Length: 136
Image 1 (cartoon, rainbow, N blue to C red):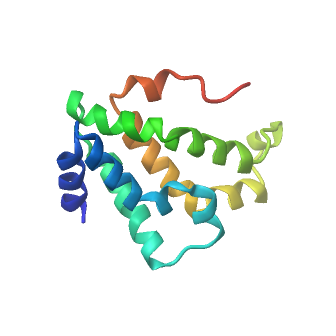
Image 2: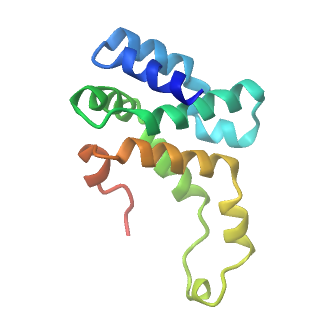
């Protein structure tokens, strides 16, 4: 499936209509909250495809067109919002060994996928890297 994800991404580079078709197909995977609440095998397959595709995108101007398209759809914003909404508050107790809240957080199925998608989209894509997503 990894090769298929790479080919699907490459076929859409620079073609707005194809990028829309691809993002429409992956729409269930782009809704991280819905994915977390309940998913079927098709949703899981689409999420895995999205993760593989994000990691397989070319690190050049052509690949940047699809990254920019997904960025414009709010994928990165939704991912960061999910993390912000569900992450336990940071505390000095983290240094002592954490807690159940953090264990529960890192076990979330959507979080694992979100981190894979963000890693793929941020790789050599400055607009994803430099934006201040979190407010401290």
